[in-house]
Length: 597
Image (cartoon, rainbow, N blue to C red; front, side, top):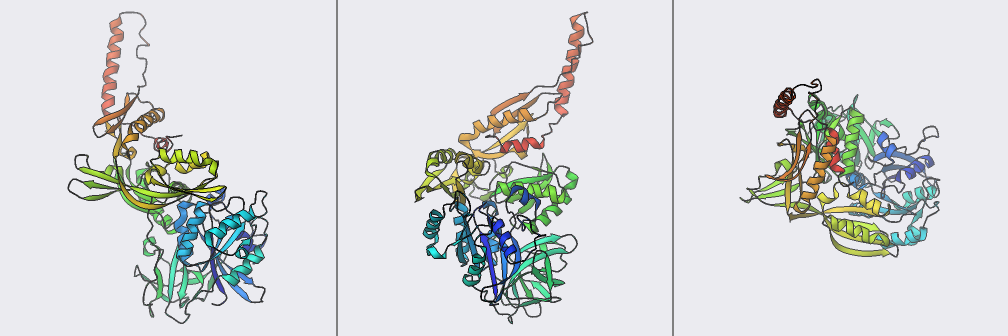
């Protein structure tokens, strides 16, 4: 165990984590030139297309240090986007050290600080690294000063590297061996291993990734999952190289995988403890906090017959993405589906895309919203994840909405625009701190509902990409919220209902009705689109009927002949309006998200 080092790479999005991981794999000859490609550990097409890491990836390397010793390095590459912070927290739990990467041209950003705090909470050894030092705009001294101010290290402790060209990588490996502590644990003690990730393989079932704290996991042993109580045979155990490498045993301090032939995804839980049935450990390892979804949306199959297939797809996806939560729900407009909880809008987009690509599931997504607490006149407290569940106004006393405390780090010249944006979203400025002459940190309290849709995009565009954003939950507060319904020919479309602040309801109602008028196809009958709060209509648009010229064949003659035909058409349209239903296309649901563009 003295020669094992477990570490992860943490940073803000796009600071070069995956590129540096590629160089570490090359330097330790874990892969040959033929296998090498950019973003090697990002094995999803989506990750490559977008240039972001969505899943954390574990891989083992062998490294011969300058002192002649061979070391086993277990590296976990983590995502940088705020929506995937749960992946980062799980990776950190399996490590003793973390490389804190900072882009030399951008400096410390919001997610850098957030991920650093996660690592400090777990008592990890932090190795600060300034990356991209070969770039023209690199400000190495300035960034070094920012790091010293942030974590209080000595200047000589800061490492400099370039993931792109491989500068400083040998020194980085030496620093990992010298400064990251070896894992502690007892090889002879009862088996105690923490599951930090899992994947589904259609041939082998569920494969769990774990970090062994104590004991030894042997092939063929009878193992038990402590929290679920399930017992299985360890059909195969091994370590994680580029591919899985089987071993006869995996010992304390190491990271590996186990195949037990589990086919049911609910029988395995990320954060669970693996132990041996014959010699169990005393207590389960403290796992991870249960994930708290920030954004909720309904996901429905386009064809209602695919409901069971969608359930299976979500189960398998949840194994690979532990931050996805879902439960069954029904909608009068869309039939049977699921209410899903996501960590943010990017997470929702990625899940939708993965369902389509990996499981060939076309889905309809309803308007995303956050969860509220509704208090009734009788003093009951109800959790509302769906606007449809909001009690009737006659029984409702008040509603509390979730509030976040956000940190925005930007250049001083964009402060005015950012303040305007936050004030428009009902934000309150709490603090303003100059981190240096060219960087300022603004702390705002904002309602979570106001940042769900397009806040991040707007922030990036008004600051020309310089502002970085991070947030934490900060309790609930009473707010003047109303439920706005959309009616098509006096029928409610529950999938388009939304909880919004009363001051913005009229403006939003008008915008939404206008947008739906553009998107809904014209029918043989007139369609009235209305936005309503309770029984009060606050906006209306009308789509006129498609009209066939029934009088075309009447040329000349008495006017009563034409009138007779028009009256007949009028009766037909009236009857059609009573029995005709309005189909809402998927584009209409998506348009609601883009109302402010």
